[in-house]
Each structure stands twice: as structure tokens, then as C-alpha cells.
Length: 420
Image (cartoon, rainbow, N blue to C red; front, side, top):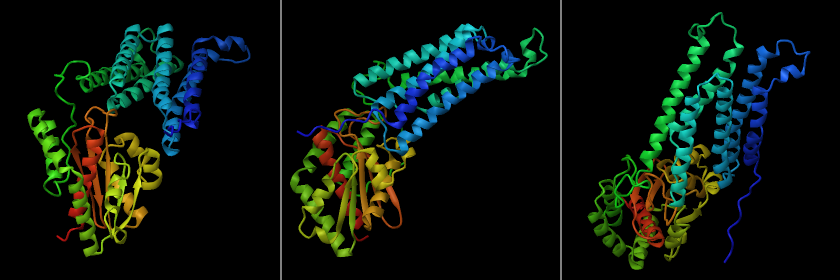
């Protein structure tokens, strides 16, 4: 059995991340050590010392955007980077908070709240990882990080801005602004922690174990045909309503519809209809790994209409071959409506076909995310005039999910190439 290629560890993005961590002690020394006493020729070192420390902090924090850009633009998103990047941010923020507390500028309870949140969230993510589940970061977490860093910079430079405030700090406008931003940061810190609890409520035992995590209702296209796609679309509604009885009933019908004979018949109908209309077709596949194209090309005469297929199993291939945006992959995830749309459009462009179908999903047994359980599938299709996508829930083991997804994609193609 061929071994999977090992991830590169020393990518430019990972080097930037590790460099960020290594420079945290430099910031602490610049901020806390009386280094201006070591250089008597530096007049007024105490006044502009906070500004130097703030500049070092901002410079280190800015590298977070750099390593993210390098990882996405170069297609070098690694598991090591996913682990170390948020850890580097936490180390920098906690180092700054502890330094401010040490100087008596910031009360210890502020640092305690922020540190507690980080420990709690890290624990939840460890539990999720142990269960094969990934909890995606929300905008609360991103806003929390930004506001925390802004507040920290304001507290660092607060003593470096001369104001005639006497013994009353409330007469210092920067003091008031710094605390307002810090309060916003604390609120977002708590809200983002609660958001993790909500997303992991089933993992933590706060929800009945028989119920599956589901995503918020999305505006998906109407089923393009009856039979399998209609059942799968209804099955998604059943999981949203947490109707396990219907899910089991739908599963039996779906498995019956997925027999090899039915698969061949559907593929044949696609080829016949496409040839009749003079329409060329192509595929872009992730979880099915070329299964749709294989089913089509197994039909005699398929060479007249099938332009080809792109098995974009890895995100790097989606980005390079199908022009799926790196920002889309990072923000929405590979299993999303926008990625399915971009894959279908990219396949049309790359293959030069009239109609393209795309599939992206989670075949299992691992890879589930909150709102995206195993069996979540997005099917996209594009022609010269429009591109659409719909979400389905496909039950079963890995083999069944892949087979049923192939069948559903073939039905989608059949609807698109049939005369209307």
C-alpha cells in the first residue's frame, strides 16, 4: 500500500509562526526591563520606552496575518500550522497581559478572565479532536483577538502619553478609551467562550446523545428530480427536525436506489440526453474521488460528450486547478455552498464543457464539524448562464456516502442536460 505523502513542516508560514513565538520574550524584555538605564546616553528613555514596547508588540502581532496569507496563497496549510498559529497568538497576548499586571497597570482579574477562557476553549477543542470533530472558529473569536490586542496596545502606551490628570486617571482620555476597548474585549471573550460551549454541547453531554448536530437552515436549490435527490433533501430536513424515525426509513430507500444497475441506468440517461442536445459535460469531485466521471465514462459512447473530470481531493488542487478562492476555503471550509459553486464554475472553465457538476462533502468516518456531520454533501452545477448548489444529508458508512453522492450528482446532471 502506498504511503501518503508527509506534510512539509518547515514551510514559510510555519517559520513565521515559530519566529513570532521566539520574539515574545524580546517584547517582555523591552517592556519590563530597565534597559534605558543600561544606555545612559539615551535621554528620556522612560518616556518613550512604552512606545518601543508597543511597536514590538504590533510588529509581532502583524506576523499573524503574514503566516496566514503565506499558508493559503502557497497551498501549504498544515496540521502543525493549525496548531501553532493560534497558540502563538495566545502566548503573545498572555505575555502582554501578565506584563501589564506585573507593572500594576492592569488588574489581575482581567488577566484571569482572559486566561480562563483560553484554557476552557483549549480543553473543549481537545475533547472535540479526540472525537474526530473540528470546531470552527467564529467571528466572535476573531473580534475578541483584535479588540484584546488593541486594548493591550492602548494600555502599554498609556503611561507614555503626557496628560495633566493629576491623581485622577479619569481625566486622562487615553485611560478611558483603553478601558472601554478592554471591556468590549472582555465581553467578546466571554461570548466566544459560550459560543464554543453551544457548538460542543453534544460532545460535553449537554444535548441528548441521539441527536445529531445540524447547521442553520440554508437557502438551497430545490431538488432537481425526484427519487434519490428528493429523498436525500428530505432526509436533511429530517435531521434538522431531529426525526430519527424518518431518517432510518429514508436510509433504507436510499440504499435500495443505490444499486449498481440503477447507477448505470442514470449514467446512461445522462449520456443519451447530452448527446441528443449536443451538450458536453465535466465533473469536479472531492469526496467521490472521480466516481462520477468513472460512472459516466463506463457508458459506451460517452467520449462524445464527456470532456473529463477533476478529482480535487485536496484543497491545494481546488485552489490550483479549479480556482477556488483561498479565502473561501479558509473562511467557509471545503464543505460549503460557495466552494461547490466555485468548483462547478472552475470545472467548466478548465474542461471547456457546457455543463459541470461538483461535489464536496464529508464521507467519514472522521472529519465531522459542528453543523457539518458526516454525510453532509454539497452538490453544485454550472452552465453558461448560472451556477447553483444544494445541500444534502447522505446517511451510511463511507462507501455508502460516496456511492449515494455519485448517484445524486448523476441525477443532477440528468436534469441539467435533459430538454426542458
